[in-house]
Image (cartoon, rainbow, N blue to C red; front, top):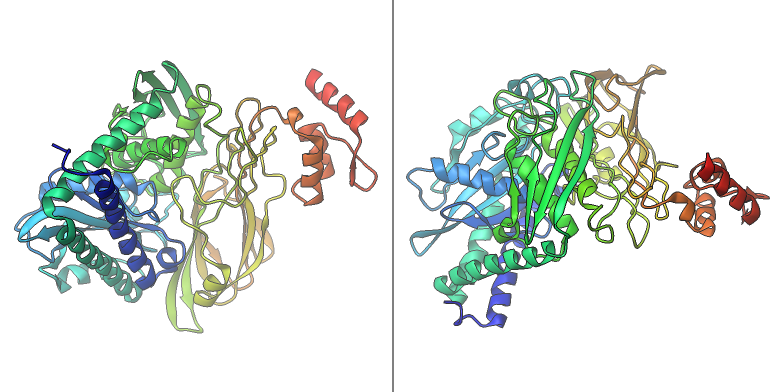
Length: 580
């Protein structure tokens, strides 16, 4: 069947599909109004199968966590779609219908070629607000999904290319800063229009049958490549775990139990021993839970091409009766940004025992979701400022972890400080590396960051849903855990530290009050006492660790003005710590 497609044509079509998605990404980013999309890149675009919604291609700049959820979400739209016409666009953010949290709003559009549906185009954008109890939607104390914002089932926002003003008015009447949303809505729809044009050009050039057959072959080859990589893992049962600090309501940790069974070329994932459903917003819908496993494996084998075939060898049991299978009305605002990263961390912690040279210690594992919402008297308008912050990556067999890297689930970056200060009434008084936060190891973890925001005008409410405040990112093979997340709000000079460490909501701040956040560092890899003392000295000179930390964590004793290593004292120190 495939003998009529030569390898060069197949490769060109694969790149062409990728390019369609990349151009959708760029169109979305360049025309979006909200900094969380235009600067932080919290969005994704893709092409999906016309019958079952399976992933055909996704933009290189898209968030990995959306890889799985968008195909599940597209499937839910397909099941409900009626009377389709060219130009129709569905809007949906229902977490229980293949979604994440309510702020991730999906647009799904049938793609017609010569009068017939050929595929679906879809994208997701993080809206800075969808209503709910707190500005920004990250309600740390929510006990039901209605408190988190407006929930939309799949409905046609555009009908035959015409924006439905009635549905639009319902949406805008239920969210804050509604006047600023229309720009993002039109940008999101325009990205799909760009995709239509580019996809049509690809089909015109190579023909519908050739492209269709190429898509089937690319899926088959991705599955073959993933199975070939999985085959390198020794057969056996591997167990790992990870912990969420708390659910934001009950101040107790939630456990993810990960059992991975490897047989020949297949991986089987069992999370049934995890904590039961929780009261607060750290429940995960099944689409996000499965997508988190997908992205974890893609982290381990990044060279495998990305489409639905990539995930064929991954078999995930539905973790019923746990907080990883949320059902209505469980709140879920923390699932995509936080719980997803703990799931990935549990996968890493299990498989590092089998393939230590391919894996790494745990990364920071939190998106650091911080929202400040209020009224700016200077510009006479309301605002919602959303901050994503980076953290340290874990050390690995070949080197130290990256500092201030993006989260496990995506490529979203922190919006430039200058942009946030221009858009919102705030001043960043500090932005620096979080000293000592890199977990000790032969290859140490990377470092998180410190930032401090001061309110300049008006009154505002601060809310945050973060994690790794109770437990630092896991070290592996004898390495130490990374430093924890820390949050402190100063109100009229008095410090306030949230009871749940990195989860709270509606903290009132006035002019001059500050919010200080320190993000986690990555875990350490292998025994810290095996680290070259000269590398420890180099870290101390750069201010990454203090001289005291150098001795406590690595057993390295510095002499003089901390510009030399006392090798004999280091030998004694390491021997003492090893015995102790």
